[in-house]
Image (tube, rainbow, N blue to C red):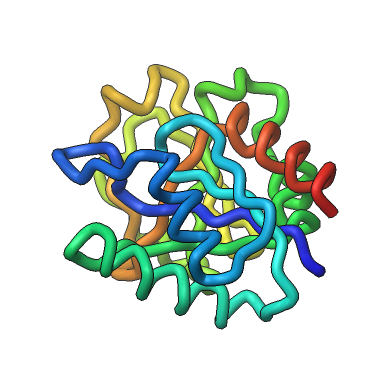
Length: 170
């Protein structure tokens, strides 16, 4: 069994509501074991014997059925979540001012090089993430990454908590 974290993109924002109890129920219905959620922003922890791509595909299909529209999901193992914390290049900054933007695949250096509206934000590549330090807070930023791939962001406080909970499940 592998401990996983699923990060749902754009739920409980802009009118796309998904109750975390419904998320846990959907996860259980497709055979994901011991589903748990963390805060109401689409963070699901679970275990499964299935590979990452299969988990992603099944979860996205089930969530589309639940929500009536596509929901993108980024999936990481417990180890990958721990690595996202360990490799944070802005670890000296407050965790609520640094985000990891998770992608399915490595976004490539061009995603950072082609970023637009960069004010005082600092960007750095990860394995399948891009880290962004927002000194003035994310809410004020106009930053746009130079990638067509969609991802989902979590602040490092949340990433650290997810990594801890996933480690406990593994």
